[in-house]
Length: 447
Image (cartoon, rainbow, N blue to C red; front, side):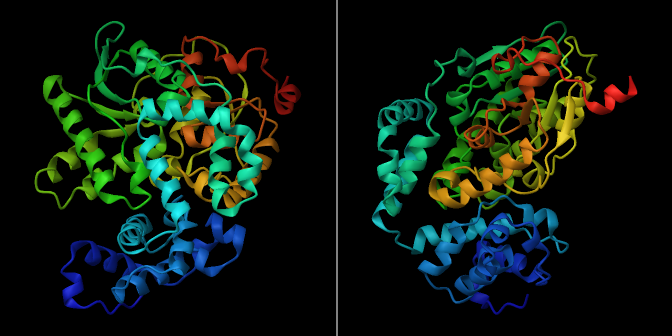
């Protein structure tokens, strides 16, 4: 794509980086076939190619964002399916991230939109605040239909409906500690306990630590780590996002210097995509560029890390039919596609790929709150595809997907690591109590 940025504009390193990304786009339109919003809405401006045009015009003319551009950028899920499809290797992620920063700096949103975004930024990244907000949401749930009838308040209705009916008790697993390996220590890792996940489902971190300890891995939960910054990063709040990133880089660098680290492990794939990008996010900070690049190199999804271990034979006979939902941040953001499925199969599960698995479920961080109608359409499409497999359980690697999909189906949905922990010696997850292994028709015929 031809550009006409001036030399003065290109003196800005962020603009120069975006210009190089834009120039790679060859207008082929392959991205439109896999873009959830284009598939759903059919509007060229709601496709990656259309958004690239809007971003180019905005940046090239050095003008403030307008309502039209903001509308279509806001509708982007940042699912990154376009990057998987693109034959020209266009880094749409960095381009849309830059556009969102520009929007945050130059566009004044309507009052209610500003307030909702501020509420999200002030609560979700902070476990104590998030826990308190969930308690309030349970009390306010009867107001959801009223909020849903008033357009500016629809995000509040979405928040109330997504809030769980009960919140697990605060779990000790998320407190700073060293969880020693069983037997000789083979590896040492730091675990990101997360913000929303640590409140919504602490069983994920508990299963992770048990499983890793069983395999000879020492797990450190360092003091001082916090939100990865993804939530505010995707809302264009650059200073806050970089603040979160710097804090974590400092914590993990110190932990590595104390006794070495083989990896920084992440159990929420949305967080993993952001942490693996710390090196880019902090590339212009001379005090952090090198440290951030090292942390990004250490970052691994838990299934990515487990795939490099020599695992024993499973202990428990599981043989359930499991639909594997690959979160967008896993398959498109981190390019991890086979590891979780291979691990589940090795553990004795019968794994099924979900039809249209490349399409987002509509969670996408806070998207299901800020864009509830589109998110609900994508969720229902995803659930229909999952239920067509008649699975006994759903496995995935991202808490947002678990919340989104779980809100629309009675099929138990678990983190992949919870199923692996069960197979390799842990207790059966409570949500699977009473679920009996089912012999597939093909296996019956073979017998």
